[in-house]
Image 1: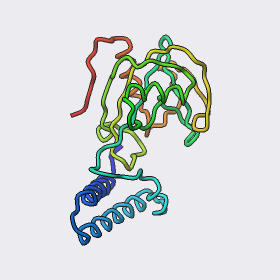
Image 2 (image 1 turned 90 degrees about the vertical axis):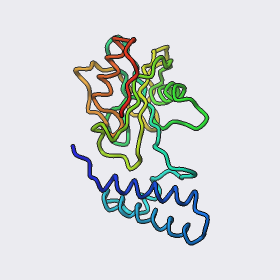
Image 3 (image 1 turned 90 degrees about the horizontal axis):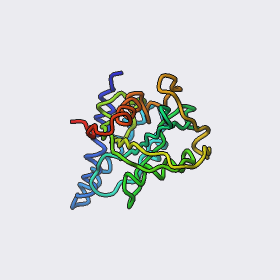
Image 4 (image 1 turned 30 degrees about the horizontal axis):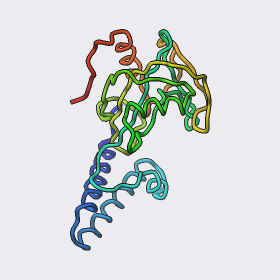
Length: 208
C-alpha cells in the first residue's frame, strides 16, 4: 500500500517547527514556529479525519531536537509458536511491546513490556532488526516517525495474563496467525524473528 506523501510532509513540517521552537533566539521566530506546528497538526487532523483536539492530544510532549520514536517488540517462541497479544484498542494481535522508556535500555524494555502485556517472564537474547517503519508496509501509518527494534527473547516462566490494554494472550503457529494489528506488527516481523530463532548466527538487520 502506497503511503500518502502528505503524511510525510506534515511530519517534516512538525519536526522543523519543533526544532525551531527549541533553538529560536527571538520571540518573533518562536511565534512563527508555533504557528507552523499548528499548521502541521491541522494537516494531520484533516488527513486522519479527526478533530484537531484529538491530534494535539495524541502527540507526545516534545522537548529539544525532534527525533524518531522508538518502538520495542519482543519475539518469544514456545517450540515453533510465536507469542502474540490481542490489543483491546483494535481487537487485533501483535508482538508484545511498546514505547521505549527513558532511563531503560531497549533490551530491558522488551522484557518489561512482555511481562506487562502477557504475564510471561522473558530474557532478551538478541537484537534481530532495527526497522524504519517508512521502509515497510506498516498500516495505518503512525503520525510519528517510528524506529522499531525487534528482540529475540527466551521464555523463562510466567503465565498468560490479560490487562487493561490486552484482552488475550496466546502462542500461534506461523502458518495460522490471527489478524495482525499491522501498525504494530506485520507478518514479515514474525518471519524474520523465526529465521533468527532457527539460525542464531544470522547478523542483526537494519534499513538503509
